[in-house]
Length: 137
Image (cartoon, rainbow, N blue to C red):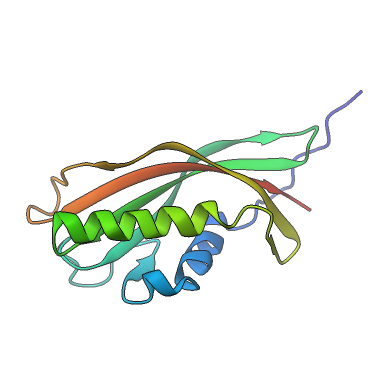
């Protein structure tokens, strides 16, 4: 039996996760993006979404990207509250269909955990990593 050929391009899972998080009312006051906004110094309510690898599962026709959420806030407490809101919103996306793709499972791999940011000295940052399993059509 041969494995299905992987698609020539995957869905933009970063954009998909940004949309999922932006749609959640608990994150309405935060900036949610794949890149820091202009003038960003790590002290404002911000969730940065990045794909950090993952794997193609041919027999299942599933992409399993690792998604990192870098969450910043004006205080350590605010950053933790925002990180937990982002975590909850992403975990709740399991079973939902977006366009032609369905998120079949979201597993927490690491986090959220406090992680000092050496680029932004005044930053309050929590980081979490999630494996998002999604069908690819």
